[in-house]
Length: 251
Image (cartoon, rainbow, N blue to C red; front, side):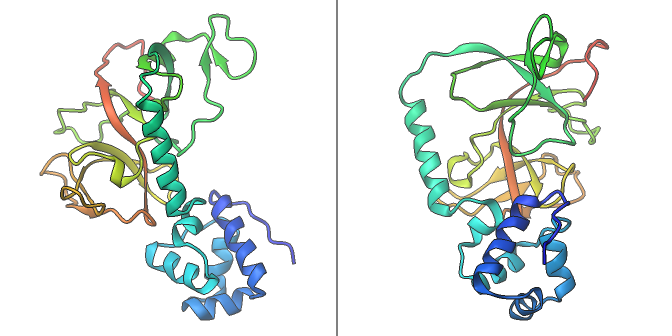
């Protein structure tokens, strides 16, 4: 029976369906192994729901696959390989230049930037824009994955990043082991679209386990344990620009 994947978590759903099929398990079978009902498995497989970390681990154990791969599409070794490649590229002393980076909408931030508009004075030829206010100049190499977004400033007492601040972040710095303790990161819970957050990563020297701390003690929610199966880091903030011009709307 064909399964319609029409939810926002299609990549995860495809991996789950594929591995369940390889094992010759029905949704009922897999649910029984994991300790959840068939309806929940169905929600995962049509892309409308994403399991929390503990359920991911139980699903991965039942399907005999790597839990990180099931959640993200890459294994732990893959992440290490990509991190080593990024460090190698940065150590080459490549030429830096000023690039215009598109300012993305905060609510629709995703883990990829494919298809983002690029600046073109005439706004022609595909996803290009002639609106200079939709971009911010960033110093980067050709290989850097710098992106930008406007922080909505939901916390009026957070003076470091007032509403309308353009956050420039490194979308390559997403692995806990690569991020310095004390760095501000943009994150979201896996499976929860349109709900990114901004917090400060804290970890003990030499440790990979980390927590996300509130940027201000007045924030109602305290530290959040950073389980990579539960929480996706979209990037590490490297700089920000405070812009209050009425010509530059908050996105």
